[in-house]
Each structure stands twice: as C-alpha cells, then as structure tokens.
Length: 331
Image 1 (cartoon, rainbow, N blue to C red):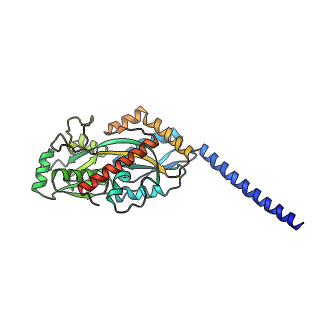
Image 2 (cartoon, rainbow, N blue to C red):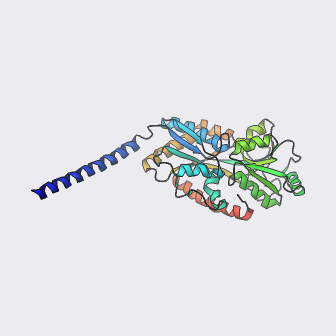
Image 3 (cartoon, rainbow, N blue to C red):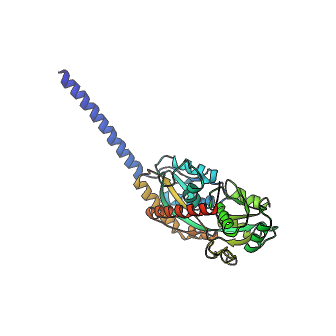
C-alpha cells in the first residue's frame, strides 16, 4: 500500500513537471508567433545626431511601422561603440533588443583594442547591413588648405597642428585618418569623441581642424557652406557631391575607406523571431522612401541575408585588422 502511494505521488509529480514544461514550451512558441507584442529597443553605440543615429532613426521608424510596434532608439555612446555593443550583447535574446552597429564595432575594434567586452561574432546574430556611406574629408573654412595636397604639405610643415576628430577610437573616421597618415607621411593629431555630433560641433567651432567624417553627419554643413569639402574616401566620387574628388585621384593613389552599418540581434534569438525581423527589414530597405532618405544623406542601401552578412563581417575584420596593423592606429 505504501509502495503504491509512493508510486502514485512520484507519477503525479512527474506528470505535473511534464505539463509545466509543455506549457512553457507552448507559451514560448505562442510568444514567438505573436512577436512583436510590445515596443522594441534599438541600441545605438554613439551619440544622437551622428551617422549611426541618423540611420537608426530612418530605419527604426520604418521598421516599427512594418512590425506594428514602435522602436525606441537608445543612445549608449563611449569607447568607440564598445559600451553600447556590450549592453546589446548582454540583452535578453527575445527579439525586443536590436543593435545598430558599424564597421567599427564589428570589424575594427577587435584589432584596435587589446580586449573587448563582447565577441563581435559569438555574441550577436546578424540580420543585414543597412547602408554603406563614404567618409568625407572636411575642414573648417578658415584653415589654409583647400586640397588634399595642400593639406599634406601643411601637415608636414606643421607636425601635429592638423587635428582631426572622430566618433571614437576604432570608428571608421579614426582609422581613415590613420590610413591617410601612413600613406602620406603627414602627421595628424587624433581627437576622439563619443560620437560624430560632438566632434562636428567642435569642427564648426574651429576647435579641431578636419574630420574624415561619415557623410550623413557632415553633408548638411557642406551644403550650407559651414564646412569645406576636400575629398571623399571611396574609390568613386559621391553622386551627392560630384564635384568633390576622391582622395586617391587627389594624389594618394590606392587610398580607399568605406563605412558600413548593420543591424544585429543578441545571439540566441529564436529563429522564427529572426525570420520575422529579417523579412520586415528587407521590406523596409526596399521602400523607395527609405532608399531616398538614405541616399539624400550620401548613403547607399544594402540588403544581405544573415549568412551573407556574417561572411562579409569576417572578411571585413581581416581587411581592417591589416589596416590597423600597417597604419599604426592606436587607441
């Protein structure tokens, strides 16, 4: 009788546990099928007003409309994007936290910093690139150089006098400047900020001399005449500024640097949720209105599959690792 009661109790416990597990699994499946059912957060690892933030707001607004839920932009600047990337990597992997990262956070920083607080590949699941943009070499109008060659001559004659700002150590504008130094022998002084916006603000105030800035955060000031465009960093001229030469054609053959931006979710995000996010993102990046907004900023929309994006990140990490080593770029 006692054995029978023990058996019954054990069986009952096992049944209850199995039922709970089944309910949990069903609940998880239902939650994924119902995704999203609340607002999402998109972490931006630089300050408001910079290129990463501009693109995040363009894409975030359209993506939120496509998903039927609002997307809150959360700026977490600092350490060349590492602070925001770390927060995103540690976020709950349920699809409600997204990360607008850059060539810096996922391809440059791992070579530039001795130790990162996140793993660019293992801690994230890639969705797609969003856009590529040229970097634009701009100067305060009061500076005594208007061309690449004049700037090189001035920097050599006045070592360290040409200061250049960047969104932070490891951001593509920083490495673009380091690459320029290594290829020309011109001595520049790097001044890191917590994003493009504060750096541009100091450039407008003539506190720094130049920037190799992402075009979206500089182009409005070029159009208004507040900044002087000297050259673009890409292999070809930008359609938005067709009269501005490339650095290569202005006398530094072989020079090329392009910035790119993409969207990630934390590693471990369920596949059905990732599929829904990627499908919605693809529709957004095909929307003519979104394409035009990004083009007006000097950018070009890019759509990847997650596998294509992951392979691209690996190739970029190898490429920029070599550039960091050869240029002598330092934090």
